[in-house]
Length: 521
Image (cartoon, rainbow, N blue to C red; front, top):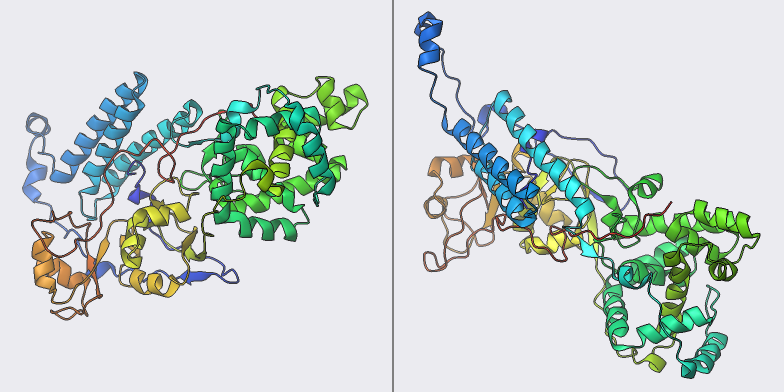
């Protein structure tokens, strides 16, 4: 997604503390004198100052190519804004993407302060529209629990005895109870539609189960609370509710900030599964210390501790079932606790509910590296030889296809040295715009320059130590993103470039569609 590639926001190096087990990718020193694509200074013609003021107004200077492109980008923004006001969010997104694409065709050349300010203003306007669109439910995944939180389901009498026997025989750190409310949701999840939801979450849980289990254990939280994540999001890292509670553990913005989850124009750590799991475990621990009861802690996690405290004070009962029967909790909270218990009971007795053969997805394994300067994810994908989608899936906390300075990026396990070596070939101030290509046997710098419509001198200057004939696997740096070459026009694999397609509406890191649920206090 190109909405927010604000290279004017800076590529300065930011120092970062080295965390144990993390790799720090140091920024290469910028060489301003040898920067590729720099614009030479132009001497001012003295005669220009002798032209009378009226004559200058009658014959205004002709805009240069960069200004013309920026004018075109601003016109595209205006067209997109009109579509946005008319309710055509997809049309607006296409116009906004096109606006940014027009500017990015500058090939990373120096632009000047005035240009950068105008482009920054354009990016900020588009960003404000994105923030506003979060409330309308456009770009994230739907939280699966939303559709049943206020629903009522019948109790299957045949289940009562079986479930009560299972509860008595099931080992669980979280107390289990077979109330009618729990039975009603077991009945739902045992049906066709509910079972599909349950199974989908159980499959996705394989990616994160090991990580969640480790963190719950480290924070002293019952292992059964993994099913809170199953209920909240179905293990979708980018699930968002109607009120913009976000992530696998569904934090609202204020609660996420309270537990250290960073949220800015570039990153929203509520969507980082590991960071959000740590925050959720600590929040649950605090709630348990406050209420002294896991069921009340679960209720408070859903509707906020203030609502639970008021319900307890009003009735005199510190018991979630009593509060539920008296209607002093929000309806969705009254259903929230039995939903989690129903999922826990069923998952601990998989044979009885026909879910024993569910094959979990492979665990998501990654290393974490510290990004010191603003860096394109496409550049990272090119260096590692991995699809851009894989890098984005590993980093759901990124709100665009760019990692800002100071971001702790997840990369495929064991790829740290390869990434470090590749980034070292690209000047630090160019890591947002430049690309690399992995050579094949017989490739030459001159041939690659011709193929990708770059000047041989620019490619040679960007690769000062590369031989004319390249070894297979060698990285070639391009001073701007090379265009895609059609398969018929070139037998060799072209370098990957950032997609210019509109962001998809469905699940993934770059396509975001929030759906809302009643905010927690």
